[in-house]
Amino acid sequence: MYTITSMPPPSHLASVAPLELDLGELASRGRTSKAAPGTVHSVLQTNQMRVAYQPLVDLRRGRIFAYEALARCPVAGLESPPVLFDRAIAEGCCGELGRTVRRIAVDGCRSAPLFLNVHPHEFDEGWLVRPDDPIFAHDHDIYLEITESVPLSHFSLCRSVLREVNGKGILLAVDDLGAGYSNLRYIADLAPAIVKLDRHLVSGLIHESRLHKLVRAIVRLCADLGAEVVAEGIETESELNAVRDANVRYGQGYLFARPAPTPPPIDQSWETPTMRP
Image (cartoon, rainbow, N blue to C red):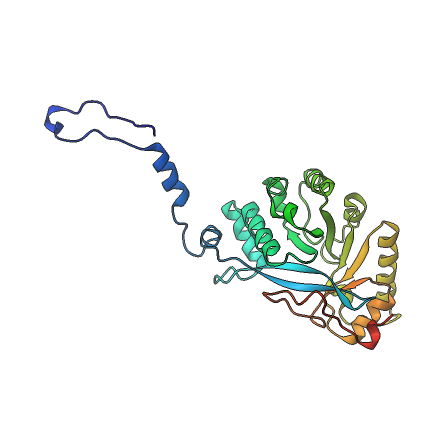
């Protein structure tokens, strides 16, 4: 303990005790001070973050391949994940929020591969490369999803970080292909194991339509670059038939399951006629 003692007091204050400050105690008080309610700092301090799991299904086998872990916050005004992370950026705790979500996700699903979203701003804070990050303690494959709809402002830094974690066994997935910026260079430069087609490419997809031909061409391109494809947002049997006819390997969407606090059993199957070999 470090003690700071004041100079001798004037005679008229002789009865006042010397000032003693425990610097360790002051630091502790600073660390434990309560954040304002309704802030992301408060959410993290009070352990209010939650995760919902949605399965990704192998369309050839009709079985669960992995789960995507989705951030959930019950605090009014922070329920939307984009709003939640925007607020975290403003408060300077985006990296801490991302790590918290990863910890909850890994703790809640130890028995299967996981897809975890990473906000581009997290690359500025260095959390992902820490050796004690929860992703390095998972017994199954981890796929970090890098959204294609948000531009990576510091692409060289992000690519460097992604290559470092990839070198430690973490796999990469490009999310939302076909939305926003449609930057196909992500696929070439990042060499992802998985490419996820945005819902806009899947909604209302009809066999042999122009959009269907585009999806089929994207699947061929990804295969040439060594990536499998996930079709997001599958809600109908006709969409399922169309993505399978386009040779999409994996599917995700309300047709299979909505996000839930507990992941469906890994051995659950969807044995519909369209999903049989």
